[in-house]
Structure formats: C-alpha cells, structure tokens
Amino acid sequence: MWRASPNFDQRASDATGAIHMVIIHTCESNYASCWSWLVNPVSQVSAHYVVNEDGSEISELVREQSRAWHIAASYDCPLNRRHDCWLNGVQSNHFTVGIEHAGFASQASFPAAQLAASATLVCDVTRDRGIPRDWQHIVGHGQLQPADRHDPGANWPWIAYVRLVQARCGEIVVDDSAEFNDPAVAVATLPAAWPTADTTPDYYGGGYRWAPTQAAATDGAAFAFLLAAAGARTVDARWTSGSNRSSRAAYAVVAATGDTAGVVRLDQTTGGGVWHTLGTWTLPAGWNRVVLLRKDASGAVVVADAIRVRD
Image (cartoon, rainbow, N blue to C red; front, side, top):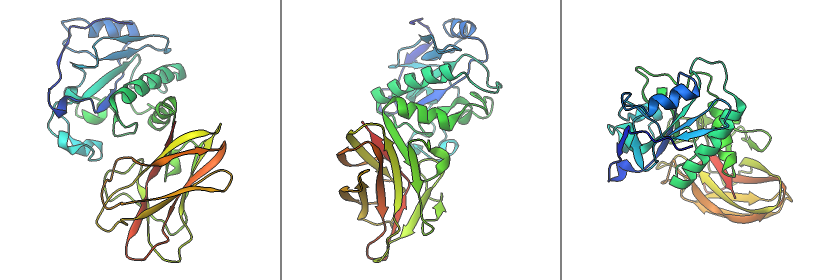
C-alpha cells in the first residue's frame, strides 16, 4: 500500500549512500497511528515501510532509493561487532532501509504472521540490494542508537527472524554454533580439536572454530544441510582471515549418497567476513555436507565459521 510521506531527502551520491543495512523498528503504537504519524509533515520522521499487526498489509511511505528519516544516530561500528567500520560517523539514514512494525518494544512476543510478512519484505530488499542476510546487516534501531532507543525490544526473536529471512530467499546457513542453526535443516559437527574463538572480528553468528593443520589429521569440521529435493545448489564459505591462516584450506562437498562432489581450496589469509563461492553442484535430497579439512602440512590454522547453500 503506497502512502507517500513528505519526510525524506536524497541519499548521498557516493558509496555511503548505497544501501548496506536494514533497520528494524517497532512503532510504539498501532498500525494506523504509526503510518499516519510518519506521513505527517509535522512529525519530521518517516520510514520506508510499516508492517501491520497481522502481516496482512504493508505500507510503503518512502521509496528505497530515497533517504527516510528513521534513525537519529551516526554509525558507530563497535555497536555492530565492528562491521563496516568505514561507515563510522556517517548518518545512518544514508545507507539503511527502515522498517517499522506495528506494536511495542515492551511486548512479550510478536505475531508469527507479522514476522513472516516482514521476513519476506526483508528478503526482497536484501536480494534487490545485494545485502548480506545476517545479524550485522539486519539490525535493530536500539542497537545503533542505544542512548535513547531500545526498539524492537528484548523479545524480538532475532535468531529465528534472520533464519526466516534466509529461508524466504532460498538459503540455508550452517553456523559453527548450534544456537544459530535450525536443527531441522542445519547441523554442524565440530570435533574436540576445533576450539571456539571470537577474537578476530567479522565472524558469522557468535564466533568461529579453528584448528591447526596436521598431515595425518582426519577430524574435519562438518557442516550438514538437509535438501528436501535434489537440484543445483551453490555453496559458499565464510571465515575470519589472518596471517596465520591456511592459504589452501580444503573444503570437501559430500553428497547425501556419500560421494564427494568436489574439493575446493581457498586462501583464508584474506577475505574474512564475506561469503566466498566454493562452486555449484547438483546434489541429492537428504543430508549433504561440507567438510573443512585440516589435513595438510603443519604450520597454519584453518577457520570453520559458516557455510551457506543457496538456490
């Protein structure tokens, strides 16, 4: 539903004006009160979208290519696990899309239908704009403006919500931590030789695992994902980079049949914090796996952070 707000201006013409994140808000009111205030010129505030209580209607108030006025803070990357620090000091409206949700930050839960409609919308925005679907690019208003805002509140289901966005976009992400996985479709198995760490930034989820390379090692880090139907899937991997990382980390893609579909080596000394494509394979229905091997000459470490499978 298009309901034009006059409360907007133009994004910057340089890289800081490109859309990099989605900010989640709660209205602190019902749907009608929310959108009517955001289109009122007296308010001097707006958002790009407002999702109603049951997800049956979404109002668009400002076109995405324009800058809505939904956050009164400049970006400070330590508030976002030191992601995108090149944006430090830039007014956050420049590079974000703001989505309001009818309701209150204090509420105990959010309607499933509202979350589903919102996730579909965020899938569309992130797919159109090339935005990663993770917790550093789908963020809360209160996270980036903690001094005087706390929406969408403590009970916004962040982990489930981002997983829902990913599913809407045909993705399965398997993190090294079970907390961030949907166990119905994503399971990581990390042997004892792979301790947890979070000292290097740009990891997915809550941290990462690492292990030293050894010529006789057989205990790889396995990321399993369930495919409901056979088909071509593109597989990506992510890590935190460093000078002690392996320059030839080996990822084995193992089909549900037990056959190895391929082995790909990638340089983990660079490229941390982004997805790197391993390749595209036709994989069967069932539990397929990506195994990060540590069998190699000693003297380096390999990092198991997350893998992503997409249509």
